[in-house]
Length: 102
Image 1 (cartoon, one colour):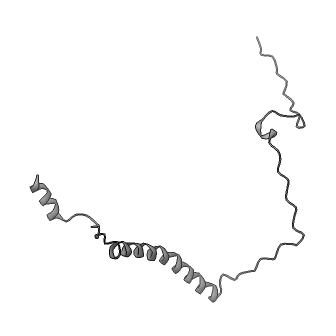
Image 2 (spheres, rainbow, N blue to C red; image 1 turned 180 degrees about the vertical axis):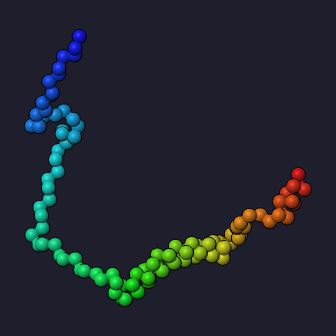
Image 3 (cartoon, rainbow, N blue to C red; image 1 turned 30 degrees about the vertical axis):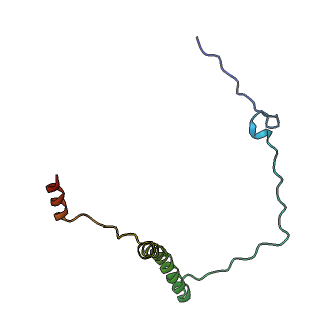
């Protein structure tokens, strides 16, 4: 037996749907501005002034997180009186001392 050929289903775009999105009220489109948009300034990225300002901006972006973190750590140590945290791997003598203590 062969399968019957099914007709394609026609979807009416104007028919109401029962999806939740279709039941939500539509927001009005805001009116367009009467003034045309301002033209964008053309920037010459090969100029010396642009390169100097770009270098200053990069130094700022790199330096500010370092400045903020070191200021916080110094404030924590000097004003709040917290001790210096040991950083890095423990020395080999500390590992030997821990083994002897057991």
